[in-house]
Image 1 (cartoon, helix red, strand yellow):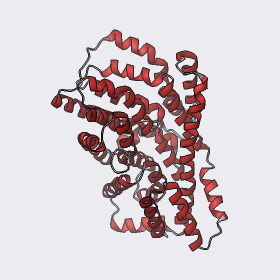
Image 2 (image 1 turned 60 degrees about the vertical axis):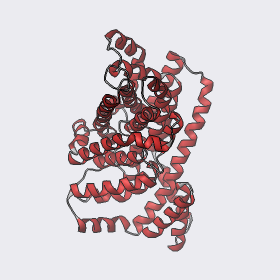
Image 3 (image 1 turned 45 degrees about the vertical axis):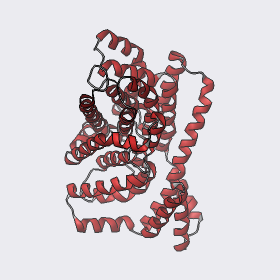
Image 4 (image 1 turned 30 degrees about the horizontal axis):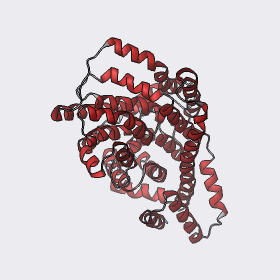
Length: 427
């Protein structure tokens, strides 16, 4: 049954069908071959999307829309400029720091690439960065957005593996910051070699002015993360609170877009949410078929026969996920692979929260690699560069991401210590 599913999936990919349709076709074929009534497919697909934590996805997507159009993102970027604009690399450092702020609110790598790229790339070109260099920095920093909470991939992982989303969110904070510092270090080195990125003099008064202008926007990630850690609300409730707060400061305080603009934001949010939910519905059916055919249990037994060493197993799984990321987008890869791989790593004592963050990061690298890297295509469009130019400029950053990946595999406590000490529970 597993080979039938994989065969249909790869044929669908080769034909250019959307992943969700490929999963739907595979589900129907598997049902017919198993002599299972098609009505069960409907029941299982409804079960897959009938989840309260899923409400967090449209709310966080909408928060990203409000941020981009309501003045929140711009103020955060100006604060980032006042904070790190004096570091060698200039606006390159600002772009990465801004992505850390933006990622702490939107939860989407694609939204981060589009929003920060449109603001930063033209200015970076004026400071001596080439088009590919400026685009590479803005594109690669978008992976921070799916690690620092909130994170749509971590929400999906939590749902399909029944892992606490709140703990996943808290676990992503330190790795996200580590990724950001790694990219800033690489930018510092590349700017030193290429003499790109003019620095600005650090001025405390400018920082204070930027902070006063952005403190309401900066309070948004504090609201989300602080509320979860403090037990005030779950990750799902945090999404609602974040949307209400962002709407308030954008419409009432900043007043940078009119309420009539909400209609277009709602349409874009509904479209993206519908894509995710359709994918999740069919993936739930596939997961059910594989479970009743004992596929996860068989995989666990076979992997245990190869090795029961957690470090070696993580290296093998990481290599597999990197390959998957080359040919499949993050969202379908997460909902398909997570239910199969999580029991395997749990069988050797690996924390599913830790593995969820690691999996999101590895598949996030896939967003930056050809041939299907979504963020690459968005970056090419925003930066007006070719794919070949962008990939070549990103080579040093690929190396940085792999170094960070090795560090996270070698030292899992980097991921798990914060959720352990905060003892966050629930979804």
